[in-house]
Image 1 (cartoon, rainbow, N blue to C red):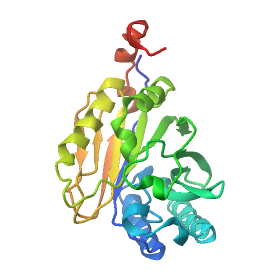
Image 2: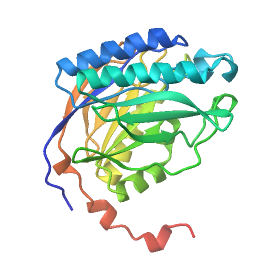
Image 3: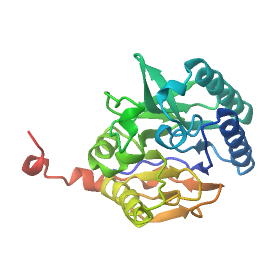
Image 4: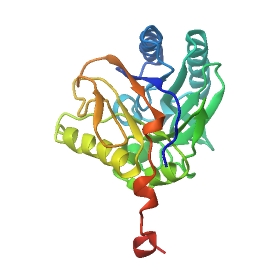
Length: 264
């Protein structure tokens, strides 16, 4: 099945981040301005772009402040609304006395369209965050359906398949894939982006944070698994790509022999 719908423009903001929310807000504001100039409809940010990724930029979650996060989120919401842009933004959020590593989706009027909490924790994540306990949901941005995942979730095909079966046209992956000794991950991560796109017939948008030890470039894969846009690894960059939802296909999904291999 192929859906006949118009194109829309996605900006991928490969921004730098730190533990200083004021500095992160400045980075986010700059990227929103560039995305607006490029005529984007949606701008996608990396994991924890607002707050800084815990295991790298914070000593412990004791330094997290719910009020400060809420205030910063409101500033981002206002910036997106002023620019007329929809946003997908990584941040940590308070949750039942702890914190989740989350992404929020905002419409261009500032309305929250969706939230996803990182389900698959990696490395020292568990020292800072609780694992998400709910399935990722598909939300609508105009006529386009979007799902969200975070970083290590990319290693697991199951949530991407669930989002595709749920009607997503695009899956946005916000990430911080960094490490002095982990540059081997670059081609592996891109292979996962390609595979998640091709096996589901969907677009996959991968937004990684910029920095010296950035292992994988931000990129966008089309429903065939081809990379249609790739940033330069290690630098701050906002790239814009046109997405055609009419290219989304359920061909592979409809051909599954699920009765032969689905776990019971």
